[in-house]
Length: 293
Image (cartoon, rainbow, N blue to C red):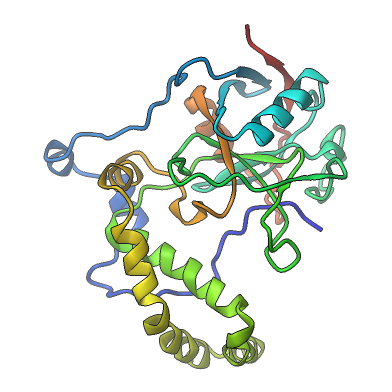
């Protein structure tokens, strides 16, 4: 099975067209809008004696700091780095505005066009979710198999991703949370009839039937969406709005570190041309990863 990060695109949380922020609106803020709100950034420096890893790639160097608050993930990553595990592997999955993903051992010297994402050691790592750690741009996190076969959300032992993300104002933030809640609603066995109707609508390729099911689910999950959003600290919302990330992955995939330098490199990597499996057409190679003193 594939270790990956699910990018939910099949569910439409239909917000008011007048209120929904577009990607263009969020990325291309005007000088006037920026003048009324200072850019809010997460701490992109080493947050105090965190172990650091340098990842040299053929696109440039990325420096990572590992969070001691997630010791199982951080220690496992360090162990693999010290063994030279990542040397020669690829960033095999790249999605602009979402993530860059690597760590599949099958990617080493993989021929062009080979589908990747299934490889790794034969163990998983228990989830280490922390309500104080977020998927801001630059977050280092663990890929995993999907919920249907991995209900405990245990992490891949070697595959990781670095968040590139987008900027999310309130309307789109809630939209993404709504997508996540609808997806979870459909996985609940109590809601099997909704799931069957959704599958039937998709099989018929009927947008009308599909939207009808979504419209019936929305009011059922809206209280949960509103509650989650209200409990997110304002500083976190501001960082997602002005710095960016992937908020709908929070408390769903384990974040265990962050980029401390090399943001220009991850931006460059996310823009590469890729094939139908999101593998870059030009290999993005981790030449060497090593622990910094």
